[in-house]
Length: 556
Ligand SMILES: Nc1ncnc2c1ncn2[C@@H]1O[C@H](COP(=O)(O)OP(=O)(O)OP(=O)(O)O)[C@@H](O)[C@H]1O
Picture 1 (cartoon, rainbow, N blue to C red):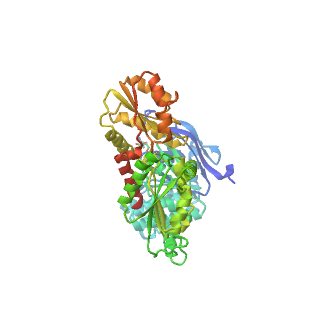
Picture 2 (cartoon, rainbow, N blue to C red):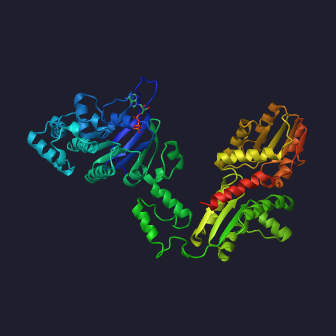
Picture 3 (cartoon, protein in one colour):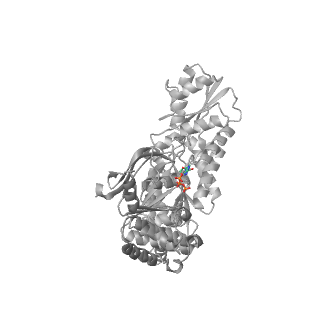
């Protein structure tokens, strides 16, 4: 359990500016450091790591906010600072900023003598640290004649000799060759074994991932994220925001899992050695596939997953057409269909005695047919709940296949939005500037719904000010659309579904006679209205994009 005693250092809402408040290098920074932890401080250049370190040793005093050491506010009196600096030592990134004595011995003994320790005791301590940090071969050289790596060793010795409780290392491996980097890493390991709390700024994601207990991710003068290395390096958005990359070992592990070579349920490997042992184990204990071996002949399939429709006319020109294009792109793969709407599946069964598989049924069939690798391509428009649930169903079969990969839903990346806009524009070549094209999306309470409003905005941004996108079930609603369309004063409103099929929603909610339909509402508002009952699956540009997503998933 975490107690207050565990918190050795705490920062509360720190603000620090180098230029009289014109900009803040620390910008409301709060964090807590637990005793004995190894903490990697990461973040883009200029995100405030060094500034924070300088505050921790009292070199800078924050303009506002409080720093606590062992639960007590830092005192900025001479005595307070001397005490603080004997207990919190900092090794600067640039050793020349730290070393100022003429000889190595003088340099290392300076701090400890300043603490009032007797000369004898100081000598013993200095000799000890000279030996442990392997400084003996150059101990008699003047400090200015040392190499970069040797200077770094001496600046660490400067601090270690004082037996601090916290050591702060600002990019200790910067400018060091691999041999000296390994040596500094070894010294750091010794420090942590001796119970010293180590705060280290580093840009080396591979080292931080393997070494740290916790990662403190700085962004614009405050902590963007704080967590275990797996939590922080597993967060793509946080890494992106802070210019960091995923550690190579994680990247490789994830890629091997995606390819089905390793099981994603294995503990995340901390280092290459662990990953190697997973791979070495494959033959005897197949992580890969559970029941299958790595060397079996592969048989591949595509599973095309759609919401479904009970309208055969639209199905033929949308879902059937999409699947046909997928099959043409992958003639050697067996194509399977699954729908996610149980209601529609039931309706087709009772009305036409046609059975369409659910996702689980399709996966069972694929398994029974001896398929080894499955690429799943949804025809879902957004990455919403339907897609999440579909993935869960598919992944419950993970153990039975060599690999399972997923193509992205239609609107996943920014590039997708641009291609979808292009596909829509191509589909309405006769749309006049004074006419409004109003698209009806489905909409969902899932957070992915925001893509509809974003796409509506992008249409306009790309010069299509007369194309509007709303949803039946969420935002942007008909009410919002009506306002925007009225502001545009179009001569005519053309309605079209922004759904893969032109089914119930398109025929009834959009184009129906009911007074609530979009058609009736626009007509009642005095517009000339026309309905184009064409699902997105009929647009060649949309089908092309889905096939592209499938190809991307297959090549993963
Ligand atoms: N002595 C200084 N005078 C003026 N501005 C400074 C000074 N030192 C740092 N800054 C500014 O403060 C901000 C934070 O810098 P800081 O050195 O704390 O970042 P950092 O995260 O340690 O960066 P790096 O990864 O490059 O070492 C930056 O905008 C920087 O330009």
